[in-house]
Image 1 (tube, one colour):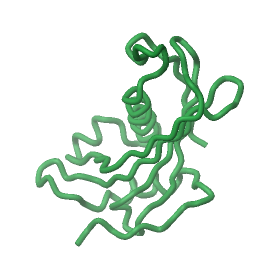
Image 2 (spheres, one colour):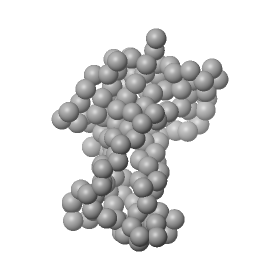
Image 3 (cartoon, rainbow, N blue to C red):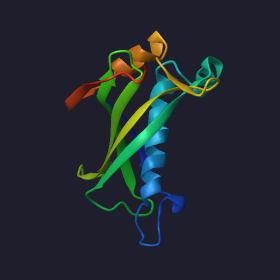
Length: 147
């Protein structure tokens, strides 16, 4: 399973003294790009190909608070994928150091051609990197985003 560990920084915490909701989304994005960078697609390759991931929907579920400077492990798995790879459903889970689940973020997305601003099928090597992600127990085959 792909995972990274972070500490909740000063800018991640809200006035209630716990990690703010948008900081969870920031960490999800960080882990996604780290996964692709470690699997042959650093940001320079995205720019060369003129494509990028686009998130259309995020669903956040909170179970436990994460406080300032607290370490948190963030996992990244595939919850759904269309056969052509044009549409995906990914899940990040946030675990406290005691192993308890703190939050879950499920994101629906696709691939955007940065020139035409239209959804596309990713290159085959990128699709293979996506297929290599561990799958959730509730993994689902999605309809294509290409009409």
